[in-house]
Image (cartoon, rainbow, N blue to C red; front, top):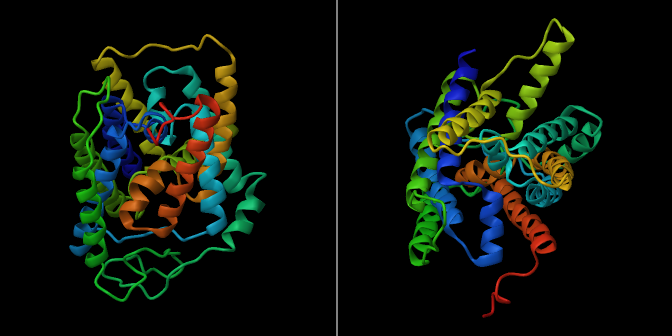
Amino acid sequence: MIGALLGILCGALFGFLLQRGRVCFSSAFSDLYLSKDNYIIKAGLLAIALTAIGFMLLAQFGLIKLAPSALNWGGVSVGGYLFGVGMVLAGGCAGGMTSRIGEGSTTHIVAGLVYGLSAWSASSGVLKPLKSWANGMKVIVRNVDPKYFVSDEGTAIGPSLSNMFNINPWIPTLVFAIIILVCLFAVKTTKRDGVNLKWWVIGVALTAVNMLTYFLSAQFAQRQYGLGITAGWINILKTWTSADSGAEAAPTLNFAGGIVIGVISGAFISAMIRKEFKWRVPKSGKDYAYAVIGGMLAGFGANFAGGCSIGHFLTGSSLLSLSSFIASLFFLLGNWTMTRIIYGSPVGDHWSN
């Protein structure tokens, strides 16, 4: 129970920040493509760079163990691309979609539920054989430094820039973070309407929440990972449906499920404070159809890839995970493909002018 409560706490902080800062990596990717708006993507990259250092500090003092996900080439490429396509149709990445529920968006309620059901079906439903087949191609790393990385027997640790080379993991981490920081502060930041927080404030806040989440999950929930959404949706649906069925050994809400509940709650609190909560019903029923299709694609894609834009892009990239780097690339490609289909080419033809 303590794990679920701590998950709700971390999720509430995250959801409050998502709503307050208008953070959604689906729109961040799309806006970068359509209008070169880099405001939110800069905040995300800053969070990745700072969190990479933060995770190393926590590991250095024995407070966490780094656990980059195993690399599944087929899963992260195919699943990542489908997730990228789906999050455009669903109207948000996993985090953005979930936080919009807290603002009263009915299309995102539909998208979120379908997202969870689709991800669940890929892990334990009719699509499980496909996921099991893909898992057979996982690339893992053995004999990692137990001071920094999870080294428990049976734990599948994937390759990262920090464990692929026989050097102190601080070296690739600092090089990685410095390169990002130099690039961020060398590039002019675009303006972002409707966002009152500075991009670097959002980045620092995301870092703090992600580090807190990783620390609390490691200490109290035996879960070596930071922020993520997909596993939480699966846990909530399993808990909900099992309770309704009267099963004796029904699953209970865990840390991951608590994060999702917290995100919705935190976004709701922020929306109420800012007087932005209202039940939103689209004028056209096709928006619900997009939500269903997008939720299905994104949910399956996230599970097949082993994570969503929060689990891979925000958290996994901070672990310097190759799996997360590749997944993030395909998130971007899938997002830009569907953005091009729906909204057309970038403003002004646009990269060249």
